[in-house]
Image (cartoon, rainbow, N blue to C red; front, side, top):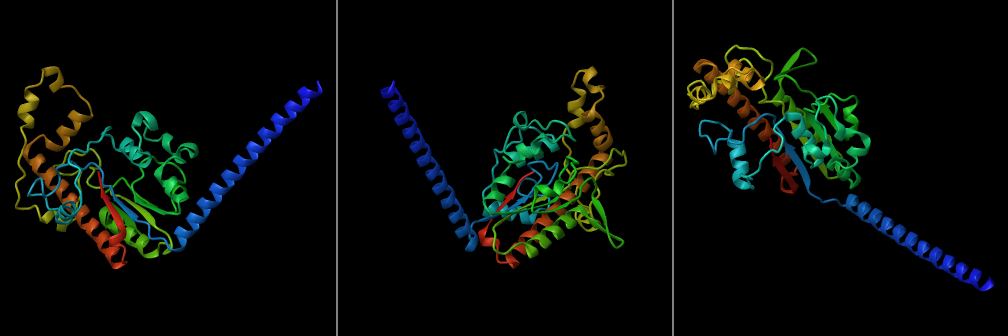
Length: 315
């Protein structure tokens, strides 16, 4: 019995020693990570990230694809950088795509199917977002514009946030009305000017345009650009696809079936007048976002950040 007790005590001592070694290793690794983080923050030259993210923007709504679309800044950005022409959205619904952007997950994984139920933003799930991961790595994270999910206290997810959405024109105190694209650019300029200078940053700029607003039937009425950008398309005729011909080739029950797709088509493109007005206003909003993106990147250059910032434009 004594011999057995001695063996058990020896085994216990060995396990205890192994546990202590592992504990010391974990402490050493943790101290090393802290030291590396401190060193990075003291002289942090890690790359900044700027995400430009408009809503409901077709992949070919750019001047390099359609010469009548005026996007000189984005054309140049694509020329100087890398354009991912085979990129495809997996779930072409705005709020699910937005959740996918934050989490890097398919909608089947983040499970944020309902507009007011952001499963991805629960505390336990948000821990796995790139926002939280980069915050832990010492990044300062900002977001302006659209969030979509209508959660209370959304600002707490970021180090800096200015949220607005749902319309093309925003009212601001005192008695000022500003276009949503311009407001996003103003907020981005404020962030870049006032950010902590000793940390790398990520700024997400979520433009509401060129997404349509409402369900009116007035030609072009669901898109409200500035007069200046709309005037650029006054003398342009947008080529019309064979939508009416294609629709008439469908079985009758599909032609007359009501639903968001058919209703949207009837409201926006039912006649040539509707089509021209809608597409010109849409492209005018696209041009407005292009100009806003240029403003933001010009501010990067003014702050001396351009050569150390990754710029991502996606929709």
